[in-house]
Length: 118
Image (tube, rainbow, N blue to C red; front, side, top):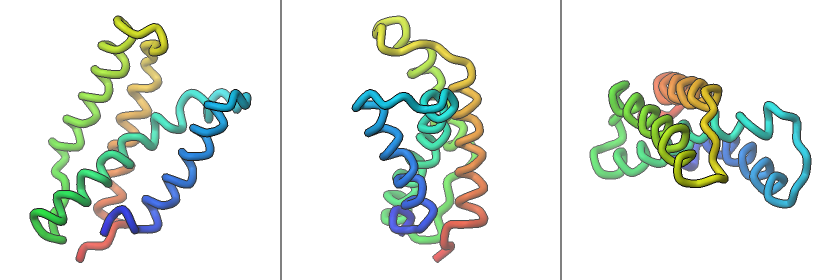
């Protein structure tokens, strides 16, 4: 199961403390504070989706590049274009889009070379 794989667990162990430290007001380095969770949000989301699809379609199922791209495009549109227009908490940042793209590429490599095939 993908969500029990060491790579998913490591990502959770990275993003959780960053999120908690942000919520309690700890000042983090700029790259960590602004971009680390954006970079890992796509692989984490896609790991959850892949887990559900493997459960429904079989263990050999892999997410096609088109589905990975759709999730990246959705995140980019929703978080960097739509939400900043309606929620002052959100700001449009093109580097976040780069993080989503890199996260999609990271997930593509992860599912091809790291995650178990069976």
